[in-house]
Amino acid sequence: MLERGLLPDFPPQALAELDAIRGPATAAGEATRDLRSLLWCSIDNDDSRDLDQLSVAEALPAGAAKVLIAIADVDALVKKQSALDVHARHNTTSVYTAAATFPMLPEKLSTDFTSLNPETDRLAIVVEMVFEGDGELRSSDLYAATVRNHAKLAYGSVGGWLEGNGPLPPGVGAVAGLDANLRLQDRVALRLKALRHLHGALDLETVEARPVFVGDELKDLEVDNRNRAKDIIEDFMLAANGVAARYLAAKQVPSLRRVVRTPKRWSRIVELAAERGSALPAEPDPKALDQFLVSAKAADPLRFPDLSLSVVKLLGAGEYVVQLPGGASEGHFGLAVKDYAHTTAPNRRYPDLITQRLLKGALGARALPYGNDELAALAKHCTEEEDAARKVERQVKKSAAAILLQSRIGEQFEAIITGAAAKGTWVRLLNPPIEGRLADGFEGMDVGQRLRVQLVRTDAERGHLDFKRVP
Image (cartoon, rainbow, N blue to C red):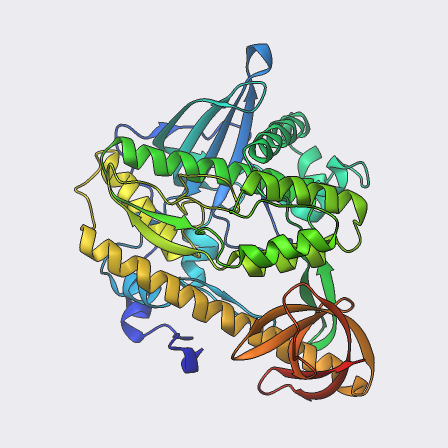
């Protein structure tokens, strides 16, 4: 982290400020609604303790539904230009590594006072959305509210239950009516996903590996699969982020948007499609790309994550930009949305805290907290620091992989090219899903090509794994 300009420790000024905070924020304005009685719940990773958002749904006539998303009011305790804010602004994100987590905000806040923990009253910004039966957004609103999380749930158990592969999670059964509410949330999310794909959102499925420890000893890297519970949160958060962006635009307030520009390597994506018997247009077309991805997944579901990874790499990284009132929106190519602001994770992402302050300003709670020039500088800084954090996370993940594979030097593996540039060529093994450098035999290789490689060197200290191509 230090090598990449990130601060792993909180400075004394921030810790002194933290000591002065005695509990969660309780002061609420006259416009703050009391929504504690709703069937709010959180769904996150099994080990997540920084709970940023809650969800609840309500069935309406004619197949319509109302969905509410509560976002933790972190700004109520972390004020702009405070010592805590200065540290968060420097790192801009929590850094999640295989060895340890380095939170953007101290755990006393992020996992307690500003976390939407079970059976506690918390201040929140609520995004209210009413969807038609086909998933179209009919209306939306934002407001401050007091909420109460009635069940802390996990992706694995909720997803297994929704898909018919597991029992009703105890946390669901303990709250009357929550099972039906989650079923409703699932139905609405499925409609939202279907509608997004009609508009050209990409159906991607990449493989993520999570470290498995027994005590302090690293034993394995386990594939973290997606499921319907994750889809609920993903689709609801996408919708809420869009509502937040449009709300700021309607109030003539600038916003920080998350964009993925038109892919620079579209020609290589066209080549990948041609290799699989599909034709894509010469100019970038998200709808055509999604149709290809759907057909490719149906034809070869086992290898689809490899194709997804190639497409993700070729699309390029996202970045933060300032959207001024009345200006043209660049949009997010992969999500097929024009209006997208990171809003829903203010405990662990600084852009979300910026957006929360802008929303509170737009709601009339205060003057606008940022000028256009300051926002532009923050957009650039957040993009750069997010990239630095991801590099740290990848390096530590590779260190974990090097530890696991150091006894397997000389073995051969099936792999796929994930990066090809002047600075190096990179491969990811199909099993285990580990990435390393192709140090020999990379000539003529490009993203998406499959090959067989041999492990020739590991360096756990630096997170290096070197492979050579096997003819």
